[in-house]
Image (tube, rainbow, N blue to C red):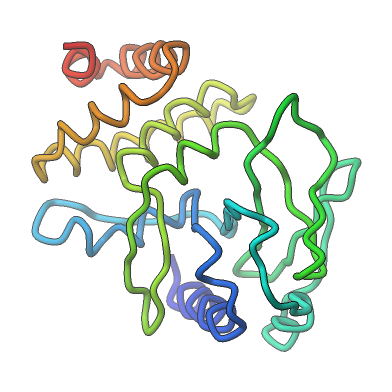
Length: 227
């Protein structure tokens, strides 16, 4: 991760906090990896990131009390509005960073984006996100505090979604990120936390996790979760 990219990310977080929205958000996805560095202080953990995408999960889309034009808020930093997919999921794009918002998929789900009128934006609804927001930690990033999924939930979620990737490169990337965090948790002495998170998910999810671990030749970790 370049210094300019990290600096830009911190400025985005600062502006979201000043606007009163950061406390309603959970950062998920690969940006969690470097942000876990303080959590794993004192053990062998070498965070790195090779993505422009920073994803913000909104657990309760209707919880915003005020309004802000998100596009206008970040415009002077060089972000421009972009769209993806046939239904026009919105994103803010910068050469160093791409911002998207996600919400948990409810019921039978929909491919259409969820409107966020308080932000003048929309969000994509995805499965499995409830697991990420069920247990979170607070970390300091510069002069703001952000919420992240607990590393155990982050890692197991990565293993689950890795099987849904159509790209083998993305599948490997998700699996490698998960294993980096799982090994750090084990070194930190938090195997019980991993087991607790594992036991909290449906059986079908547990089967997916074990399958990925065994395919990755991580049978010792897979066995420890089954014991």
